[in-house]
Image (tube, rainbow, N blue to C red):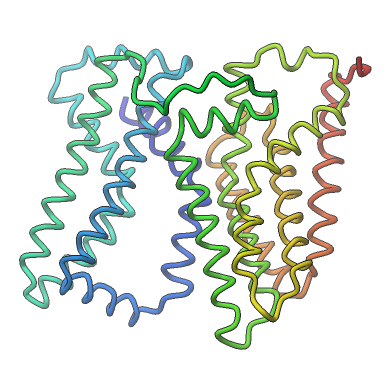
Length: 361
């Protein structure tokens, strides 16, 4: 049973947030040296404000884990998990603790590093606070998931309902913001902060435009899970969509509008933080490139049941290949062309292959 829970909750959680974790790893170990990490840890141990800020960030991460698990339990394909609550309470509780410990492992690992340094510097107060906070986070998140398992009622803690008639292209963005707000906020926050940080970092040294392309690559990979979320949303709520009399280009244009809306905040961030040495039209080309690659990732994920491990492997491979091409000087124009032509070509090929193309009405 534990292996099944790991596959449903742990593997899927890390795959769905692969872009975010990739960004954190690169930020933590690509831009910060070991000495800077040590200085940051000492600052956390010596400042109650920084310690409270770190605990707040960890609390938000724990809240995201709990929200993800509660959402998984409500999905129709996982209703068989309702029989899990028939197991003895100690056994079920122990399994939930193992699952949540695995999901919180990145946070626990970094906290362990801080605790070791705190013990070495005899900062026992912060060490006890961190240890107590970790215990609370793991236990409360496990209890929250178990509570939803035993009480599978609708979640009433949602954003206020707006009686506005939305066009089809806005269905998923509205659903994402309303029913999965933590996923939306984390995805857009990491993407926006990354692009803003890269733009601010650009004038500080002898960087060229490849730095902006690397930031764009990471921001795009941070949205890698959106295509799967959109496809899952359509399979659950828009079952008639595949049977509508729409040509392939009509369907693709609607998805392009949806992803353009999702990607719009990044344009505002790039224009607001555009370095003086970079022309504004280059920033617009960057944004258009990211838009095309989001559409390409959607066309690759749409209608496919891709194993989480395989999807994660593809994301990591894409980052490595993309980074090598950027470092070898592939210009933004080539990235723009590859993204949009790849999206259009793959979408048309898959549509014809599945025999779904019908004349436009």
